[in-house]
Length: 543
Image (cartoon, rainbow, N blue to C red):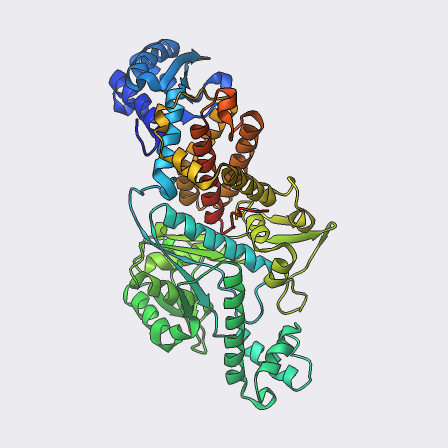
């Protein structure tokens, strides 16, 4: 058996047998699925129906031939193989296979679930990158949880990952921030298009002489204070960044250098006093302005320079996490990236949808300028870091998220993060009851040689644990951290059923193998902890 991945061993046996019957080309589209009901087997494959046309045989006849070959390959690991429906091959795995699978998971230790990528990449994940003109709000919290969890998952999936925050410290919004700070320092109202929040008053109080300071210097000082505050919030939220890249650095020559490169490649032209990029040549619906008639560079020009700077730092893949209001920028940015000589498929622009904080059916409004801010710190104070991160990651990034604050505060099984953490704490309690030495002894045993007869709920739990490598791979490939929230909850449910049906400590009194059951519990605890860690959520031993 493949000690690293028992499920891969089963899939390999099916595909290799299919190749013998009809040639490797006939296996395209082959799948090994987990049936919805145990009576349909542990795993089911559609391979016979795919092979039938090439073999010119009825699918059920092909399934019988395939089953015979699979039996020979899997030996004692397979309890029986059945042909069902129009030609499905249903496989029922033996207790021997299950015991060996648990042994493999235990032997892998903390590396269980880690996958080796076909092509290891150096990946830049740029996320959050909110204007440093206000405290991070709840929407920023969704971006931060997503970007950080994605980076964790990509790293566990074998890639080299760097996390970056793009500091928008240049342009009109920063100028207005400086004007707003000075107005507050003078006891005046900010400009109509300025920043109205009370936090601006706090910033003004922290800068000596703000009332008489130059606006540009005041803006710079204010941005630094907001960045310092943001770093503190992100650290509290368990989010770290490897680099902070400032937009202002680009305007010291990088922007013009990137535009000259585009011009040299023949992609730039002048019209109406402005310089334009022929993005239509690369799939955009219209060309885009790079510099205005005044000579000032557009935000788009700075974004181009920034992405060229990223390319020159040697990343294989760039992943940008953008807000919902940036949806219209995707095509033009990919066009510019291609014009620079980059592969647009290696630039991924992830568009996050909005998050609504719900309390009694009412939504809290979030706007840095209007001052009606639900800050990320306030959210953490209310429901805690674990609940904030778990809930922010519960839904796919491309769907709007309604975060139920009342449910997030509950310490009940209705609260998914509490439910998963409680399962981890329950297993920790079981293992404490057994004692450290007893657990260590159980984990050192030859679990594959156990004579444990597995209860159906134990089989269901093992199958859940075996899904971890595939879930990690899928979450990494699809940029879908939300899958890990669902998986963690599924494992917790499977363990609850197992513990309801099977005695762990004192298993010998009912004819069971306590060593095996302790090891299975320990492996489950490790899988839950790993799943939560990939989400940036703690796995407590006590609750």
